[in-house]
Amino acid sequence: MKALLTIAILFIAGIAFGQDTAMVNLGDSSVQVLTRLYPAADSNGHKGIYFIHLHQDETTALQVAQSHLQSRYGMLVTLWQSGGRFIYFSVGGKTYMVDPNRIFSMAGARKNMSKLAYYNSAAGRQVKKLADTILNKLHKPRLVIAMHNNKDGKPLSTRNYIGRKMFRTHINKSMDSDDFVLTTERKVFNYLKAKNISVILELPGAGFDDGSLSAYCNRRKIPYINIEAQEGHAAEQAAMLQALDELIATYNQH
Ligand SMILES: [Zn+2]
Image (cartoon, rainbow, N blue to C red; front, side, top):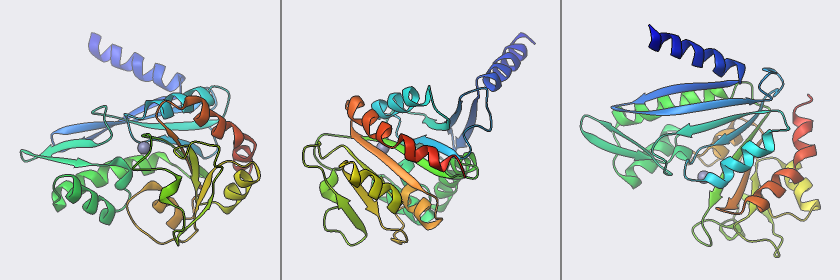
């Protein structure tokens, strides 16, 4: 009884603070999909502006998003599991691994899981449950802002995109090549280019399907921005977000 009462109180407190936790069971394991509204009291205030943090080890990105949202509208979606980049789970005694930013299509998940460990359709179905839970949280999205961190140098920097057919780039050489914005919105690209901030445009209709959230949003014409910074570059990442502030607000006003 006491335990039930505690759960009820936590649940009510969660609503009051605009927080929600969805537990997704993957085989013998589980992942939590946490959502939090900013400001907590205004459940409709975010009007389809979503911030999403998929890689749990990218702690700078999460802190920057949380601190930015203290004075803005939005819903923050976060995953909670192993503490690392990948999601781990076991089905029938076998352990599977998947990058949570490769689960937004079955083809992408299959390719990624095969590369990391092992794939079969039963494990694929588990991963789809996680993807569906996350996508259900992004209700009527007007703008999705993904928050990511990378490591110094390889494997990811602005250099990955230069000269590629499906991308356009504007690079500010005085910025660290690990700090940049990637978007599917030409408007966002032009806006940041005018501010001389390093920005990559994933061309609308680029048509590739790697299971990433950018490819998913691109296919469905959901405006998407990824704020990418080297782990620890909190000031740089906050500055890129800040530079987009006025433009983000326009997505909230349709
Ligand atoms: Zn990431």
